[in-house]
Length: 292
Image (cartoon, rainbow, N blue to C red):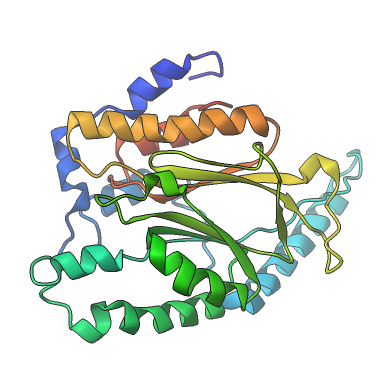
């Protein structure tokens, strides 16, 4: 599919639903998603080496090795013009942290197997902070964040650890919906673009545009690579044809906005998509141009 395909056609393809997709949320006895083996086998990058980094030190060490390898590769290429790369590594962590409101309402049903000290917010939040400290991501995209917990716990604690954050628009906050998505970022690495071109909330997502900072003095990177758009989604959960169509349209909205406010800059889509790894939505992500 080329760049001339219409947006509506992309949305139609991404919103296709198969009966077999219903199994996407089921897990095997070993704990992995039922469709994971099939997805892993068909993934175009299945043969590539994967390095798992724990914490910023390991990430920095790997980044240095990658940079050294890239420089060596360029030096061996004859007749090629030297490149002065301004690319900046960016680590993104996405996590559905389970709304405490939903947990309390379902603790005797969906979470009856979970000890309360592990399921309650008081038990989980300190462990959450330990993981954030250990991994130290540049961007932290959270789903199922209770609006009250964002203000009382998440924002102040993460600000103490060098982050700032935004919660999805309060328009979403009502009696039926106690939670939304929240995105945090390291203030020594990223600066939120001010004004209407810097942030926007949608029904199931939030998009933020950042300017990358190149050093501790918080100076912007070179203009050619200065911005990145982070889209944090928590899509429709219904495993039906209507649900699949809604998920596609819920992704399309922030992508359309990003193509207008940051058309030439990288876009990262992360979050909880509530569908299987080989669903049509992900096939379109892998194979098609969706708003460029």
